[in-house]
Image 1 (cartoon, rainbow, N blue to C red):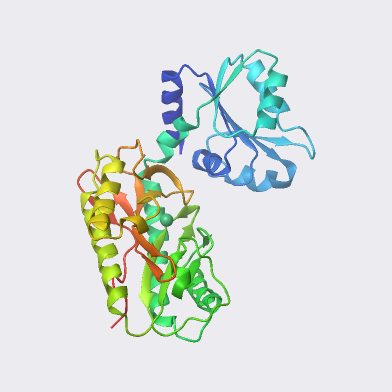
Image 2 (cartoon, helix red, strand yellow):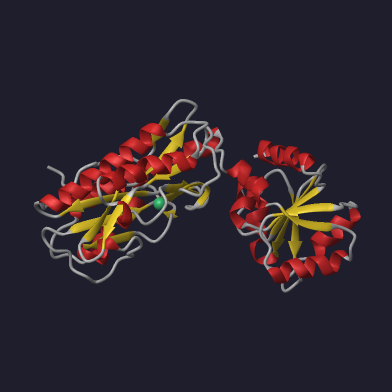
Length: 356
Ligand SMILES: [Mn+2]
C-alpha cells in the first residue's frame, strides 16, 4: 500500500499538484486499508493524514497503514482540520476525487484563496484500474467463491420455488464459501422477467421450461467479483437454445480478443457485431463490460464509446446479452484478468443451459 501512495505522488508531480484530498471511502481503503474514515490528505511529501470521527477512531487507528490518524470530535466540521493542515503545509494545488458541491464550497471558503482544489479523480482511477499482485489474489478468491455459488445455483434451482427462495440458498452458499459480503444485490430473474437487464428477485415462482438469469458476486476483503449465467429448468426450447448459443459464442469471441494494448471499444465491437450478424443486434442493449475491484462497476469501461485501452492488471467483466421483451433474455458474464498476452477467466463454471 505504501507503493500506492508513492505511485499517486508520482502522478501528482506530473500534474503539478502538491496535495491530494481523498473522500471516496473505497479509495481511502485502497491507500490505507482502513474502513470508516472521513478523508485522507496526501501531501506531496511527509506523512499522509487520515481524518476520522471519534465513533470509528479505534478501528481505523488499528487498521490504517502508511498514515497518521487524526480524530474528529463528534459533530466537528470535517473540513476544518484538513484545511488547517493544507494552510500549515502551504500546499497550493490540491487534487481531489469526490466532493459533493456543498463540501467543495465549504473547503473553498475555509481555504480563503490560499489553495486551489482541482477535480482529479482520474489519477486515483489510473492506479485503481491496474491491480497489483495483492489485489489480484483477493479478486481471485472472491471469484472462486462466486463460481462456487453459481455451481450451487445450477444444483438448487427447481420449478415451484420462488426467486427469493433460490437467492437465499445461493447467498448462503456464498457465505459458507467465505464471502465477507455480497458485491451487489443478487439478481435472479425467471421467465419473461429475464428480459429485464436488472431484474432483482421477486416472489415469482420459477416454472418448468423457463429461462433463469442469475447475476451474483461475492466480496472478499473488500474486493469483488461479478458473474452471470442463464439456465433453463427442464428441457430448453429451440429458440432458448439458439439465443443461448449466440450469447455464448459472442462471449467466447470477445474473451479470446482480450489482451493488453487492445482498445476496449474494439472488444465490445467483436461481441456486438457477432450478435448483430446473428440477427439480434437490437436486443443487446448494454455495454460489453466494466472494471471490477473494490467497486463492482469501475473503470475501465468496455462499450462502443469507451476511450480506454486495456492494460495488463485490469480486471473487467465480459457480459454480452440478448433481451427480447415478452420472451426473455440470456446473459453470460465472467470476471476476467487482462494479461500481457491474452486474458484469464477468474470466474468460471457451467457454460450450458442445463447441467446434464
Ligand atoms: Mn456486471
